[in-house]
Image (cartoon, rainbow, N blue to C red):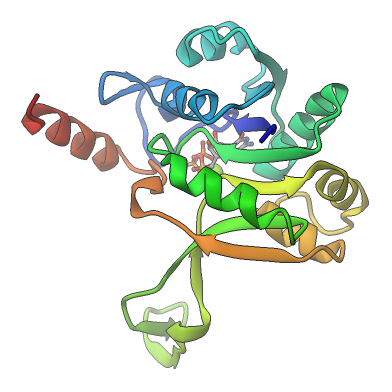
Length: 225
Ligand code: CTP
Ligand code: MG
């Protein structure tokens, strides 16, 4: 079934450090962002908008593997502003459904995309979510425990997040909060849309720290065949 995608790749990757933003660095043999482009295209993606750091569009396209179905657009100061720029650009293709994905999550299983698109039959939005396995402590600013939270009602949320395009673009345009909502499902909910929680995947973990790249090399080194 047809869908378009926005890959947000305009961050600075400050926590990961290094000279090159993490999404353009190599992991398991190819640039981080190229993994997502390849997975989306293998799943039948139509158009892709890669949201890039201003001044780094050529670098972004090169790291993505110069996909024939992709264009770039300038990102903003926050992730939400970057998503908004991507939504306006992908709108030129009049998509019915759009996946919004973090470039920093390179290991994107096909089954997750299938679950998301299936859930859009009944919901305006669908996001991958996982249960919390650890106990949850509430902390004050001095790292002293002040209570506990109930993990049964909480989920860890990943990307890609899937939306009916008309609903998510309207929700972003009418958002009145600060322009730093880290999560598009939250924006959709604020606009009255319902969000399905589908099963996520541990492999979708976000590359955040330098250590996440070290793990990737270790796995690649010991992979057989
Ligand atoms: N992102 C973006 N535009 C921004 C900020 C983030 O497109 N202004 C993207 C990042 O490139 C990444 C995704 O949003 O693919 C998730 O953000 P995060 O993991 O926080 O990446 P960075 O903001 O780049 O990293 P850091 O917070 O460590 O600086
Ligand atoms: Mg960030």
